[in-house]
Length: 75
Ligand code: SF4
Image (cartoon, rainbow, N blue to C red):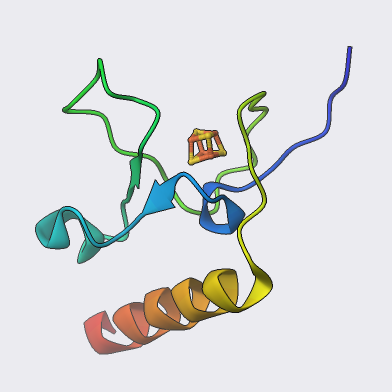
């Protein structure tokens, strides 16, 4: 059994675009959680997830930058 952790922010299944109000709080959706429509995931939480699909590096970087801007606006 592996104990490798991943982050949703670097996953192909993660999206911040679907629910802008939650994205403003720094939370995203996992496209695989279709049966849990009210569940949101933290982008940075070190998660053990079997379904993780690495997103392209530029996509991940764009999300991280967007989330960083969000934090600085809230400061
Ligand atoms: S598949 Fe796993 S790592 Fe990817 S967004 Fe969903 S919960 Fe996060």
